[in-house]
Image 1 (cartoon, helix red, strand yellow):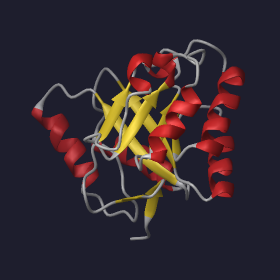
Image 2: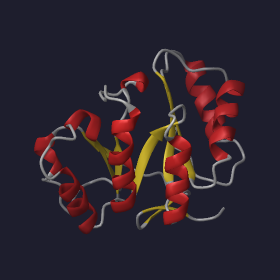
Image 3: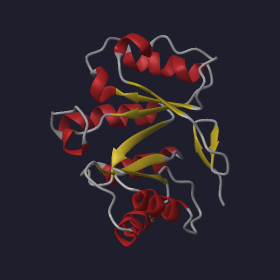
Length: 184
């Protein structure tokens, strides 16, 4: 398997812990002794009007923890209610300045942001969400394969688990033969 990185962190082989920051008051308080491997900054929850959010994200990376910036659309369960035209420059700037961003599989911005990631030699998380159920294995496998067709994409699949069979479906998906790490 080729190495995939988020910042200086190599993905694959070893499970990683992602800490999620969703309130502005904790954004500036992350230090090098943070007990996670990656910090996801939910800018859709924190707000793009939060002073110094980019500087705070860069400070987190300075202590050695890569930042994944998420500006999740309300269509995918996030709090961003503005247009993609207003979301694009924020995600693009984050892609330039931070280790990684997360963009939805269904987003009209996906292909453009993936091209930017490739030009920068970075990975991008391409995420699929289903907040009501876990689709069957073949449907999820098709989604995973479509994301894997994007050379710089790290797939993320997030579904609602309501029964043991859902866990089995996700485990089976995680065990599929692929040449790239995935987030399930």
